[in-house]
Image (cartoon, rainbow, N blue to C red; front, side):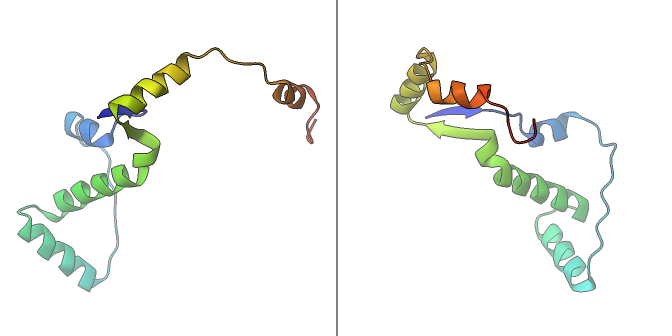
Length: 103
């Protein structure tokens, strides 16, 4: 399975760089207690728990923008398609040569 990464993940940079920024979150008491209990069970403090969960959620949310996976066969087909010369596109050329609505 081949993976094409379009952007570098944050999880890696979060480990490398020192912490210098702060994020404040206000929650209700029941939510705070839930987070504290989950962090305790995970053997982390609440900040570590929230940071880990936030990085995972952010990477999952952005996954379709960051990476896609192809089988070896589809990877070769993808590379072949990229290597193909660009064909003439007269309709596109006409569209781009005409003035737009805001011109």
